[in-house]
Image (cartoon, rainbow, N blue to C red; front, top):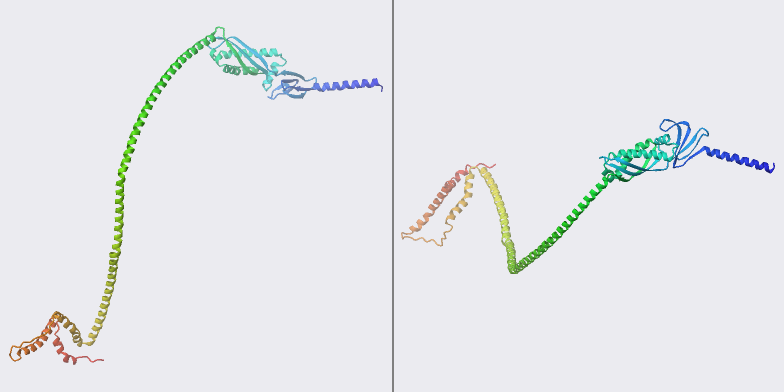
Length: 428
């Protein structure tokens, strides 16, 4: 193969490769972020379920069928539209001139994008802008009819928001979106707003002058009140100083009187303390005397009383025991007497005789006979014989007294001794 043939083959291969690249590139559809691609030529089921002869691509890439499918592009860039409305009658019949600016774009959101494809596909920007402008001006006139000139001029944000709400539905039907809407100027040909401005300016100036006068008057009143308050404060301060001086003098006098009273009360308090101390000392002395009396008198008396009680208990015990012994002796004597039979009475009388004679002699126990003198009358010893003869009579008299005291004739009882001996029972 010569050089010319090789060159021809190389050029043919390069052409085929170039044609292949061009063909592949024409089949790949790439969509930019600021555009929407519409591929037509085949029927497809859209996302909302309807049958459409196109498919939409917003961003990314896809493949198209050559010859059958056709690719169209819609720019999604912002379209600035100047909105001007003249002789638009507001509420109240005042014609207004409104200047505004709106930013509109084709919507790529479903299902609004299908409206844009059906209405704006392959339309130039100028036509799309004119359609959007006419729609916005119509909506603007409709909104102005519901607002007064004051509301339109004073609250433009509210006016623009109301206009956006009014135009949004119409713009969606066209496949457009209203990004922003600003009202730049609101005027009128009859100078209504200017008159309102001058009126309000006059009112504001009037209010300003009134407010200035009021502020001046208030300033003067405030100044006068301040001077009055200062004078009153000064008077009150002087009065307070006088009152404090009076209180100081009164307090000084009270303190001096209190000091003098304390000076006079000090000796009295000393005497009082002395008397109280003496009283306390006397109380201690009384307490000591009570304790001494208790130790010297009460305790010994209590001891003597307790000793007497114990002695009485002992004496009573002795008496009780003596009584018991006597009772026992008496019981034994009774048993003895009962065992003696008829001699018991004689034995009892003989045992009792010493006691009876002792009791009778006690009657003359205090008589002390130192000497007994018998005087004879000279009849030859008759007086002595009389005296001797008186003894048996005295004995008889004594037995009579015993009988009178006891009811027992001792002589008769003693005289029956012989007769009683024959009657004594024989001891076994």
